[in-house]
Amino acid sequence: MNKIQTNPSFFERFSRSTKGATVVIFAFMVVPIMALAGGVVDYGKALRVKSELVVALDAAVLAATQAYALDNSVDTEQIINDFITRNYSDSGKTLLSSYLVINTPKIDENEQLSVQLDVKVPTDFLKLVGFKEFDFSLNASAVIGGMELEIALVLDNTGSMSGSKIRTLRSAASDLVDKLIPDGGTDKVQIALVPFAEYVNIGTENRNEPGLEIPADYTHPVTGEDFKWLGCMGSRSGDLKIKDEDYATGVPGIMMTSGSSKNPYWKGRCPSQSIVRLTDDSSTIKTGIEGMDAQGWTYIPGGLAWGWRVLSNKAPFTQGVVDSEKNVQKSIILMTDGANTRAPQNWSNGATINHSGEVNGHSIHVDDGAAAIADPITAQLCENIKAEGIVVHTIAFEVPEGSPVEDLMRNCAGNGGQYYDADDAEGLANAFNQIALALLNLRLSK
Image 1: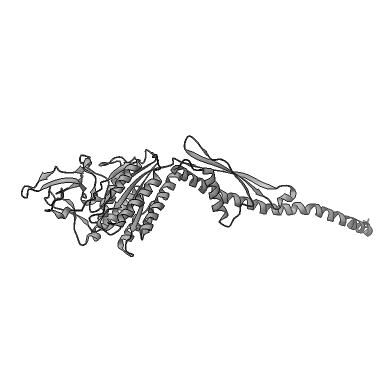
Image 2 (image 1 turned 90 degrees about the horizontal axis):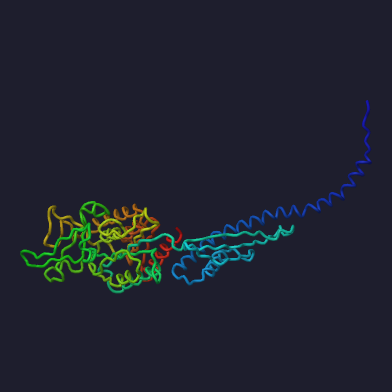
């Protein structure tokens, strides 16, 4: 049998001859291997920078859009630059590893502000193979017109709000109007005012609106007192007091003897300032706010019910837009400084005009246990309002710690609306400011 003869000296010589080549090959491969490994690190850094800048740019454009909506002379490019630098760098990151170019923002015919951000992220490892940077562009936009807003300011005008408290409320509410309706006006935001005490004053000019049940003025057949309707409205009976429907059963007007010393029971029970319907005229709504005074007792559901009605397209007020027709968000801002001190009472059926002033059996009744009756009505109204998709913000102003009204207001807020506990004048101003910004952001981000 033939055998293959080996020559050990050949393999030994070959082995020795390849050692130098291996070193040379390894020397050529180490750089790309290191570059490849480092490239993974470089690429990860670039992705991280990109994702962080996406968030910062979106927020910056929203901030610029918000500022432009209030003042169209602002430098939107500078606002975006400052916002990105502040919110990206200050969070422990650095812009030194990136080169940013913020292109001049553009505003098109549809009132959409758009901006492009060009970014270069230098490499640390890939530059060894000639790849010096990753570059990409980010785009963001926001509609200046955005969502339309319809807002009802439902504000406590009761006696406990007297003095500095009502002045603080006037100032805070007026500032909110200034933030939401810039100088020159806007057709994107409408605001209504609903001052409330024991009753709500809708204004005598609205006497003949549908959905109201107001008798003619009359003279009492026995006492000779003149009873007049001065704009004040009571509550409907049964479940209708917590609903915005079926106005064939109208909201009852409250008959009073105007300023009569013979009937002091009525004095101060109705706010002096009447409702201001939805308007985009800031001077109109601010005039109403300045006219608010503090008098009377507290029945929160009366204010809430009319806050709902001024936003509605149903009788008695029909200015509210039907939700399906436009991109409109309806909101209520409810502010009170105390608990319910009055509750509704239904008088005997069949009464047409009760000469103490009640109409058709519906009135607000003085009751030592008013809160126990009125609080559940308030809570159910809140739930019904939120079920309609209405955003509800609530403010408890200088309410004693642990008071039941705190929980009532906290639970009432919803659909994105917040509860604010304002301990003092500064807290109230801050609450209105935060709500204004929240509403503006809501409008611009949709």
